[in-house]
Amino acid sequence: MTRREVLRSTSNPAVSLVRSALAGRERGLLVLEGERLIDDALRAGCAFELALVAESRSERARELEARGIDVRVTDDALLERLSALATSQGAIALARAPQPATLSAPHLGPEALVLVVAGVADPGNLGALARSAEAAGAQALALVRGGASPWNSKALRGSMGSLLRLPVIPFEDAESAARELHGHGFRQVRAATRGGSSPSEFDWSGRIALWVGSETGEIPAAGAKFEGVTIPMRGAVESLNVTVAASLLLFAAGRAEEPRA
Image (cartoon, rainbow, N blue to C red; front, side, top):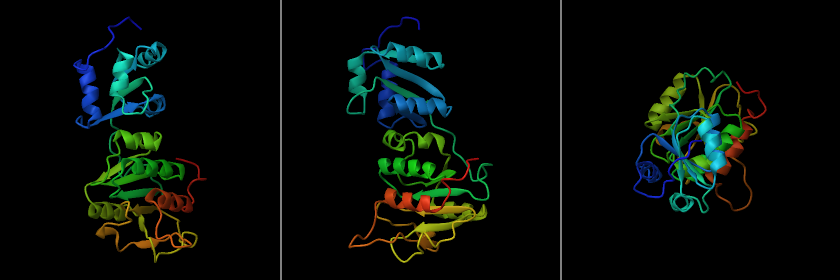
């Protein structure tokens, strides 16, 4: 890598862009901080804008530049101040968000499982939901507008890269999501706190769209008519965390051991 000037000022245009992206002001740009998330984005084929790499990480800087990324060597202390993590990992990259997926995608076959998330506000919860969905064999994540963004840096970190690998299908509202899922032959079921079928007795065959609501368990009115599935619980516990409940239901659907398309 050609010797370059080390960035030391917050007024540098590249540093300013990263700061703006960290503050959520750069629509369509992902903030990727840490070795694993950057590598996940590389494997997912994301288009990188640039990367700030600590002066002490010259080998990493050379590696990323060899991958075609515009690398800006940055003062370690400055990168530490920019970092959203408790301890900086020495690299922050910006990449373009993946293109939205659709229900017409060819990989959504006759046994496709889609997790529909409506109203989850915490980005960490959303990231965990995506991670569980991928692990359980879901083929896509459908997101109803109004909750956390899948491209929030906390959501990306919480997903451990799943949000970069799992196709994300956005919907403006619950009504349009329900309508389009029905039109594409999905049986729609909602996670119900009580009164639903047992996951072990529910027929999970065919195209399934599993709806989960907000952290309080509330499902949009458009999903009220869907058949409910309820996780049996003992004791005085009224409900489970949305990520725990969704994970149990996703694995109950039985797609984890099926070969991936």
